[in-house]
Length: 236
Image (cartoon, rainbow, N blue to C red; front, side):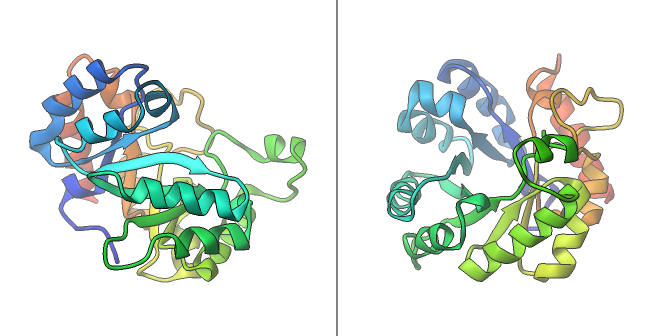
């Protein structure tokens, strides 16, 4: 099922904070715009499920914990994550393999199910970094290979860089979700991201959702920054 077409429903703001208070303060300011909020390892480790419950009052949640373990352990983690209030998206690591992803999918049955996506290759990794961990070939080829594996496992989609979105869309079809991090407005610093694109470019390439963190959370006016990105999404 594709993301809604309203620009606000295609933006996910990464609340990468060490504590709940500043994350919740920002989420409350951004909530009237109607986007989703991402809770990752830093905030979840510090505050736990209480962070999810609080942020969910401001909007739907992408729980970005990238589960990667033996199939039974990942199945249990997905089951617990799907039971948290307001969680719309949950992710696992595609490199955990077909059996692990199938176990995750079975742990997330209808009717009360979340959208389950697999992380392919982290957007901070380039070809040289992949070679260092024993993965050969260009990132794009490995990403598409992992996306096909996620689809075979019964997952709803993948997390991938904007540079691979178009190839994934061709390989996996129109109803396969593509969540794109590493999105930077024109002129913004790359930070620790290697494979990036602008919001408009990511949408045009086939992204259903784009994830934006520091260009919004570190902005002098986060609401204005978010509105600017929403306008760019609308233009695409």
